Image 1 (tube, rainbow, N blue to C red):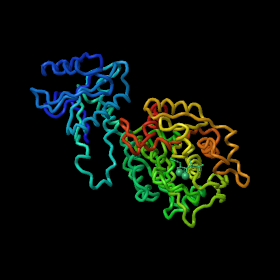
Image 2 (cartoon, protein in one colour; image 1 turned 90 degrees about the horizontal axis):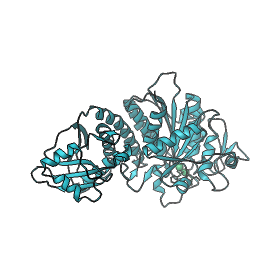
Image 3 (cartoon, rainbow, N blue to C red; image 1 turned 180 degrees about the vertical axis):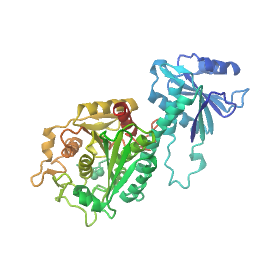
Length: 497
Ligand code: BES
Ligand code: MN
Ligand code: ZN
C-alpha cells in the first residue's frame, strides 16, 4: 500500500474520507464541500449518532452528483482530546475500514487545525498509523485467494502545504521500517530463521548505515562466552553474536547499548518443555527482534546519538552434546554458573552479552530486552511489559516514553532478598531459584549480577508483549514489533541533542 501526502484537492473519484470533529459542527473546508454536495455532509452529521466521535467512521454511499464511490466521515473527537496515538489509531481504523469496504483508493481531507494540532501533525500521525496497520506477513501463504487480500492500494492524505507533514512522516516512516523489520524476523519460522541465517539477514543493516559485525563460535570461545555457548551446544546450528553500531553523534560520546535475547527456538533443552504450545517458542528471539528494529529506525531517521545493538543468537535444543542440569560453566565475566534448569537459558545468553557490551563499549547505559519468563505473563499480562532497573532516572524515562507511545512498562523490584535465592553452593551463582516464586524478578537478579557498578541498566521482560493473538489498531495479530517505538522515543526525548 502506498501512502502519499499530497496538496489539498477535492478528489473526483475513489473514496473521500473527511475528518470531522465531534459536536456536529463542520469546519470551513468541510462546509465548502457540503455546499457543493447540496448539504449531504451536514445531513449525514445529523443522522450520525455521536457524530465525529474519536476513531469512528460513518458512510455516505455513492453520493449523487459526483463520481465518488463513497464519502466516509472519520471522527477526530473532541478538540482537547486529540493526541498522536489517537491519530495513529484513526489511520489504522481507516485502513481496516477501507479494506473491509473493498476500496482501492482513498483521499483523506483534514481540517486545518483541531485543538493543538495543525493539519501537518495530524496527517503525519494518521499516515504513520495507516502504515503500521498495513503490515502483513504473507510470505508463506501461496494459495491466498484474492478476497482474503487487502484491496487498498493507495491512501492519499491531502492538505494545504504538505511539505512539513512529509518531513514529519518520513521520520515516523523510518520508525515503521524498524517495527516491520522486528515483525518480519519474529514472524519467520525457526527452520528459516536460526542463528546463522538470522546473522546473515542482519548484514542488511549495513545498507542503512550501521556497522555490522558477526561473531562466530571461534570468536565467542576466544572471548570466553561459555555461558552463551553452553546453551548453543545442544543444537546442530551454531550460535552467533551480532553487533550493530550506529554513529550519529560525536565520537567522544559513549554509546547507548541495546541488548537482545535471540533464542531462535527454545525447546527447554534437556529440561525439555511440554509438547503442547512449544511452537510458541519460535518467538523467543523477540528481544533481539526489537533491538534490530530499533537499530534500523535510529539509522534510517539518522538519530543524533551513538547506539550499539548486540544480540545473542542461539537455538536451545536437547541433542547428545546438550548441556545438562548440574553443569557448571564459566561466563565471560569470570563468574561461574551452576546450570540447574537448561530451560532458564535466556539469562545464560544475555549475561555474556551484557559483559561484552560493558567491556567493549563502556556504554552510557544498557537496556536489555528478552522474552525471559513465563511468570511475567502471570504478573502483568500484555498491557505492561516488566521493567527492572538499577537506576531511577532511566526507569522514569522508560515509563514516560512507554506512556507516550502506548507501549507501557511497569517497574518491579530488585533487592538482595531476591538475589540471595540464586547463591549456589558449588559455583558463584545458579541459574534458577529453589522455587517458582517471583520468577521474573529472580531472572532479573541473575542479570544484575553481570551489570557493573555505576552502569545505568534496565531489563525489559517482553514475554507477554512480543506476540499477540488479538489485533489492535496499528498492531495486527502476530508479531507486534513491541518496543521499537518505546526505545526510539526514549532516545529521542532524552539522548539526542
Ligand atoms: N522463553 C522462555 C520464557 C517464555 C515462556 C516466554 C512463555 C514466552 C512465553 C524462557 O526461556 C523460559 O523457559 N523460562 C522459564 C524459566 C524457569 C525455568 C525458571 C519459565 O518461564 O518457565
Ligand atoms: Mn527457556
Ligand atoms: Zn527462552
